[in-house]
Length: 346
Image (cartoon, rainbow, N blue to C red):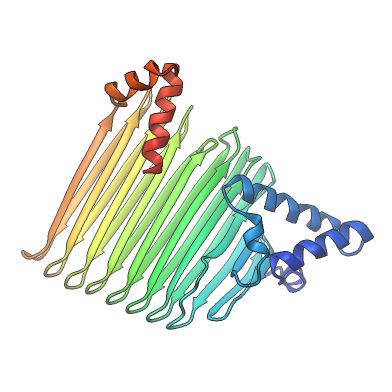
């Protein structure tokens, strides 16, 4: 059942919603619990690397979603954001009109400040022909003890359109969260999709990424995933890139570090299914302590004019880099962390 009553009164830009929240608290009107939740989400958004001040401007398209409540939405010309709360999450449909070119990325804030629960995000992105748009998504779960964040996304990129999507997570220290995103994408002729997923702050918990993309003629798909696991974190990435059209190109780049007893398994599949299709898979994993890392590349070529390549490196940090940093006064573990974070930023 949709939670329409909550949605109907909160369809406001962040700046107006924040002022309404302050009025609610000061006057006792409406729902002060909502007001407190809104402020808590913006605080968590900042910890995840977001800039709340950016959300204040009406020239920036944005949405703030906490658990199953849509707290705020701001639309700009050419961008439509339709969202409704569900019993355990939110359904969202974002449309970018053909030919739209945005000066600022669309800002999305997802998360939960509760310690337990489930958040399901069912989302679709329709990027019209010739449009160019960026997205900055920050997912915040600062207090997670027993949480699930489940995302099911469909992305459709029209001919000649470009979509850049960057997602950063902030988790608390408990590791009691499961992050389970599934994405199916289609890149039209001459279109471009660039995605970057970062989970490097706080405990990972359990993360299982499933991403499939079909690329038409002369289209491009670039998928980047970065994660830093510790304690008993469990990291899984399964990406499939199908280069179906002539001259289609695809790249996957994975950077993962695991330490203590954490585990990672990276499976990448690239299919060269058309003439002049070009695919490349690049995976680097760093292992420390009793951690375990695996990489499983799958290469499929169905046209003798296509080419798919793969490279992987799994092991410890470089001895020379480690010695250089320790010679400058860092302890070994500090030096290792500096090296790992340098890799994750690259």
